[in-house]
Image (cartoon, rainbow, N blue to C red; front, side, top):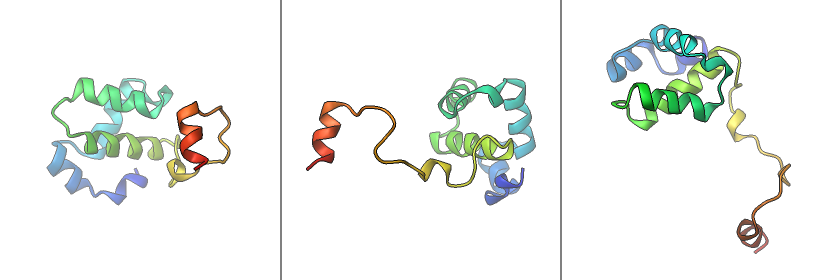
Length: 96
């Protein structure tokens, strides 16, 4: 829960009706530790459609960090060239 501290317990509770421990235990019960980020967000979307997407994303990232699945700034790190071929349209835009 240390990473979740970037958004305080009170702020997350006021905005979502639950605290970090409640979110994390619910995600643990859903098997989220074995899911990719997009699948965690999808689970939150299906199980809590009332949540704005920004909160689904924030909860998923905080969960991943708290469980050691993602490190701070991980999403910002990219390699170039990418390790997979780019679609033709993207290659044209990049090479301009």
